[in-house]
Image (cartoon, rainbow, N blue to C red; front, top):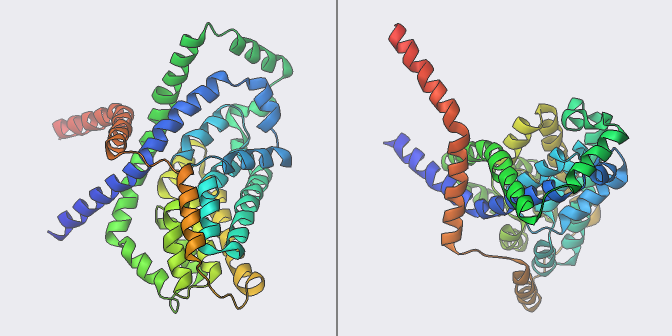
Length: 371
């Protein structure tokens, strides 16, 4: 009975997590498809297909203006990588997008105050840049896809010419949607769904309310524990800001709040599994270690040097104005849209997994028959 109860809770939690991310996944599939089809590969290679710091900064800034979660950013980041971006700009983009967006910035100023908000904003820019630079420095063959760094000028011009010769708007739309869903969508869904299931299982064995009780007890809180625990949770910067504000008001150190937001929003199991499977082990190792370590450093600096003797102060008028303004940047889809999007992602997963499932069952049948 206990096992069945855990499985039931795990499935319910996984479904809730998927509902929160599925719409953004579908939007990302569409956007990534158009990005790949319409983007001039030669110009894109010059912009992000190199180890320049400026390329990392460009990808970081572009990610900071997109209101997407860490699951929704997976297809977009992979689309950049498949289009010729180096590993550094790709990981910088995938780090910056879930941490910083217009709604999160406005809410952080209104709910956490200008001191914490400024540190959070600066860290949300600096950390992705550092991750991008370090990733470019220490990456191996995964620095870019299929050795694109060795492409000649003639090859780039040929690709650009081929792109320009697309036969019309309708054909471009079909090609974009086909690649976004049948290629990228199938591949990403194959790893996102298992990641959601595993995250649901973890949160069922160790419920999210345990983390909330742990964070809500200032005497128990350690920044290291927050960094590890938040990486197991599905954290949305916008959705968790009121919770973080309540922690700070109840006595939690400001560095704890910053570490929770940075490490939690930039890491989750579906994202890490996707990076591991689609880019490589070294990429996900560098990404996860750099995110957690950078968040720890920022949290300790905030507590010891930047905000010593910090006194929380909540201005309810300012908070209400910030929430009202931030709501203009937040799209809260109806439940029916979330459910349809979730079913679409599950369908893509089944399409990707079914051939291997048939092969696996056939092997079992042959084995049993042989015995």
